[in-house]
Image 1 (cartoon, rainbow, N blue to C red):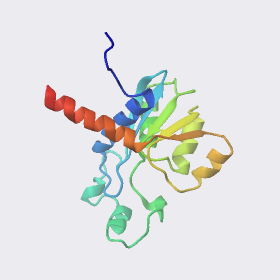
Image 2 (tube, helix red, strand yellow):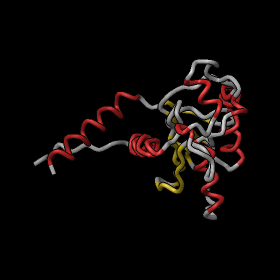
Image 3 (spheres, one colour):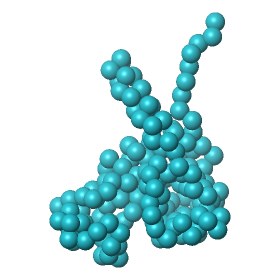
Length: 173
């Protein structure tokens, strides 16, 4: 007897985790989640938001985000003013804080293609592959075109399929 059984691919599985992690973000503009994976094992996670001790973004801790909410500046402008630490940077920082030294040849899963600074941090720590769900237009493209880092996009419809499956599983139990 053959049983009809399916489960997410590793990429889908880890991207679902990144999507879940982004729910902790305190950024008022864009929620992003990221995880670092080595040998199909989750080693670190991060979401974007203000650093500890700084008022949360949604509480007014980031003047740039407030300007974005008021449509005073456009997306991508004045990023140097942003008080939020990016999700990818937070995941990398957590590796440092907890003494995780195995990021070489690991994979970074992020709900958005990382910015240039986060991509440079990933490369510096040995991450060679970034898997993302949504695009981001910016100078990161240079690093992709020159094969310094490989970036792959996951089909968002497949993730939606698994979240609907999760809804069904929760209702069942």
